Image (cartoon, rainbow, N blue to C red; front, side):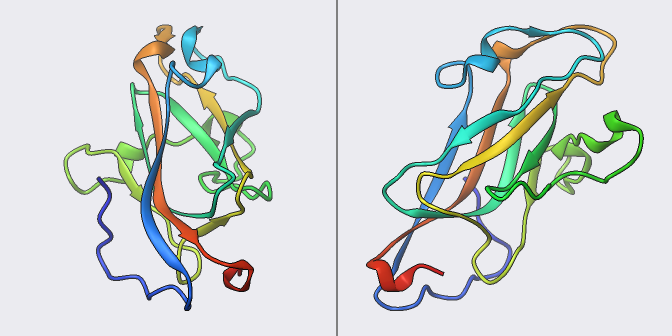
Length: 156
């Protein structure tokens, strides 16, 4: 479970934030049912959010040794170094972890996290940077954050 290092501000009244993790794997994302060849990458893979509340992304975690490029619901890259060499724009979260490869990357954007509207789509591109094929059924991507339940006044 993701626990932020510092406290986030309380949501504006009458909102209510509830912890949420969107987990994507072979059970709910068809791209994770195959194999990705060495040096290969996928196209655009939408990660659908629930329609019941806005989501504020605060951390990402991947399993299975797959590199990825994540974009927010507006198409802004969250893990892209914008290099001319495209494979270097894909990240492995454990490269940024100070906890011996826990693979959790904290994201900060504004007071609550990276905003995603209810029913929106984050987008991920997968890349196999290894010299051997990766069986994607062993891979997963988790988006940790909070859902903000509210009346229309709380939308920000």
